[in-house]
Length: 608
Image (cartoon, rainbow, N blue to C red; front, top):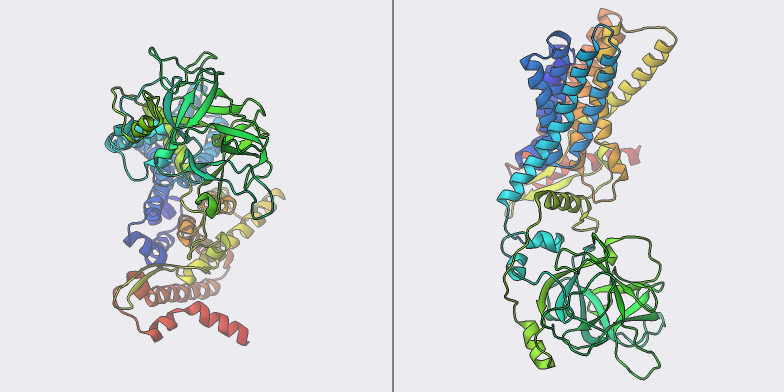
């Protein structure tokens, strides 16, 4: 594809062969491909999208609306969808192709040789192939994905309760047949919708807050309320009517509705969920949340909560298991029950802090909860109720999410969930990638010193960066001179030069610059899609310098000799790094030291 792209851009077979050979001998691309990692698939579809669009664009000049014209246009859209489906960063190449297609469409609109109907047909064809088809193909991927992977797995907890309940096994096995409507006397577990830093459930236990914290602040010394990331009997709460003493469901059940005032009773300790104007342990600007214990400290119970159903359709909506997303607003102080997410110290067993948020800043998932497990309480006595809470619920009913609801949630989770924010041993910054100031150890033989590292060919990386800089300077120079009506390049050559820059230099920029804005752990392999586009630009710049800037035959011969020597050095470096690329033989300590070219270079610089 590298060969075809350079050829379709209008450059020589020699430049196209050069691009193909550089792709073949680049050590980082070899390593990533041999270990079947996602960047290789992403690069494949990125290049396929660009190649398909170029073939479509060249067909446009000669045979518009022919079978090959339609084929390459449709393949462009499918390849873009596959790139995004491989990794979300594929959207950068998709946007690049859309940008180039939009520029071509704009020139097409100004073509006076085409009728209005013809122009409209061209625009509709591009809209369908580059906008509608990619969306449909992407949806198809996940339709098949969710159809085949319909069972519960080990990482389902990052998804909402409704999503988990739609899968076979796991939560679905537990929640199948649960009562749909939450009633007074219902026994429930409350899961935080936000699920950050980890999914967790509202929890309490018999331990109390310390009288005095490490910083000298005092607490209420009441029973702790936390958010616990594991299923536990202490996650159960009973929804109580403030006007009644019973903790069981009446017959018929009396459902809880939006705006109702409730009390939440901890099932195992029968303490009431409470908040008051005492600073939270780790969030001093928020209120402490506790389970009320009267220690005769003149601190009255404040345990009334107003139920606010966030995703209701009307003000008379009933609180529903799994489906309803609710907030608990404290009646006395108007504070909202919120997961702060801060891990408590050892006295809080490293569980997550729950607070009363006094200053509500609009909707946020950390203040929203949903009922995951639910049963109608039948036992009034404490001992019988504890046995009931420990036993599994057994009832009959099921609920399923629609495909679009599961699709939307899955996309959001993939975009937002982070598995680990800690710094990795081999993590790096985008600036480290250009200078090849980093690498990744992929594999080490357990008995010998054979190993595989993600290492770039320094000759290719440095040359590709230099070629990008040279292209940018030449492009600006030509553009300024054209503004002064000095055309150094014929119109056809200029358009070819500009298109090569838009796709190759632009492909490098859109796949590299956004990483400066990302707050995530980054690695060297994130640079490889950008590098692939840079490598395509390198022979283009070399051919341009040879053909346009070298005036005499002697200059061209000298420049050609330099290119041959440069390519030979790139091949030599690639072969030198072969043991770390393929990991096919053991290395002695001296051989490993000899491969650490950067350390030798740093010593040389310091010495001289």
